[in-house]
Length: 144
Image (cartoon, rainbow, N blue to C red):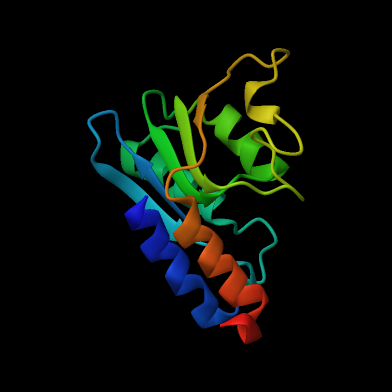
């Protein structure tokens, strides 16, 4: 999670929301990392999770990321949750919940929907305070 937090710290440099993601191989080594790049690239799909998943697929040479873990600083949205399921990631670990758009248990639970053919394990609440602090500092800078 600390690697994902370091990625999240880079995002505000380009005006992006501070979210960072890392994809770990089955052996725990880092396959890919990313931060939000929507503002930097003008791409509405450039969420940290999607970018990290894309980069991990390139690193392994396949779209199936079986055995891999996505670590992200904010609970994934519906788009990212869909990408997680489609990439066949085994596990999602996230820091802060997202009660407004979270799709891994807060608002929706897309990643564990029994109607889908793949349901990764979800591990919420890993180092939530530093992730929440980054988001608060970004959205309410006068509070700091």
